[in-house]
Length: 114
Length: 112
Image 1 (cartoon, chains in turn orange, cyan):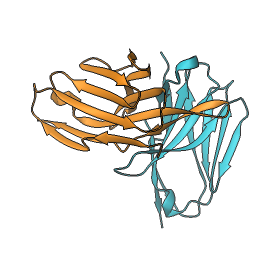
Image 2: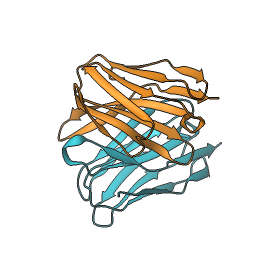
Image 3: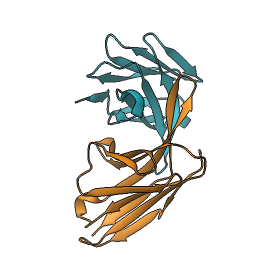
């Protein structure tokens, strides 16, 4: 499972509150990613990181920020949660496999914004 | 902007039958991935396809890549109930950043 954990696994929060999701990996992978999964949309990239303090936006980054102060932790923050951010959030790492890389996913966090 | 389209979106098939899931993408790429997701679970990597004409097989699943047609297929042979899941393709055009764009997924239901 590439040593990826996510916390919390489930969270219910109210509109307007800040929320931080944590992704933790134990194998020193350089690349880390945050996705959201919604019915009819597959997985969409929110932000990704290619090293400590090196992050960039994905296709659905509005309303989200990230931080990576240590190799092992990649934090996703919803500054002021909205109902449209109700989703399942997956963290992933990218690991070299021969001539390419493969992404491995964490168990997911189900977030409900009421 | 890269678009990745899968069809069908839903597939109900009987055990023992064959079927193919299609993944079309809009921008040149030679890296395509297939994933499986069981209900309520995370994604599991199935295949990595790296070049035109690449073919990978695992059990009853076979994936292929035609980069000229910008098409990948996931063929299911003699389906069994355990293959019921959602299957995603994902395409990488990011060069060195390993950023992939996912298709919307194909939900496969195999009926005994």
